[in-house]
Image: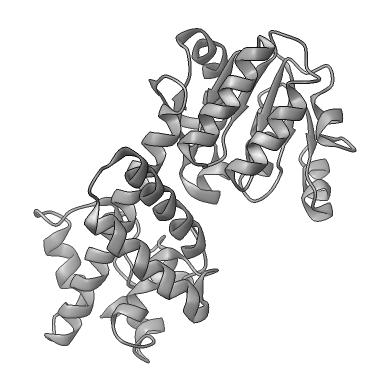
Length: 305
């Protein structure tokens, strides 16, 4: 059933997500603070509003895709003073669990069903509509949100109560950050030992070293043609965003009293990578730092290595 959807946050992720909702037949009215994002939204069939609250006016559903927890709480505070009870609120930002739960509390006080539904899959997944959604909230709210999430993604999971979607996201991305560093270290060591990249990939991809960071996002050019390593480490998933998620995981671990020593080390390494000026590069580019310097001169033509 077609619905009217307000979409707040039309950046690299939110813009394509909103466009996919429009393609699915929904009426989408969006807002962003960046003029270029609004222009792109118009070209994708999204009606542009003059403010976040204007985007939400008359909507059956409001979706937010914002940079940090404080932004989500600020916007949801305003929304919950304006939208009628029964309006479904969905937040697909990646934020701390406490902010997600605070947003849920605001919605509950207003009588609005709510879902925290962060995503995995990057900008490519947002454009292709193949994102993975990890949702937290009541079963009733999830049931209402699920068809919309499926219009934007391929895999949709109900992970539990309020904040569970964010918990799943930061745990998943902690695994990703740790595993990418392990894969990068292995390739750096293999190079020192005279082992070709392709040989290491061929062995590890069908052995106990197999993981997503290796087989889908291999950090060296050649073995996986679609990986950012074959495109000058253009993101993809920027290193600054990986650092954000690792820091969220560390904050959650401190609050919960959980020991995450590898997660802490991964956060420190990505913090150093960002401090060296590489935050805008794909997170797999950290292999160049782990080698002790920039890429070998042959890296750009290493597909045959």
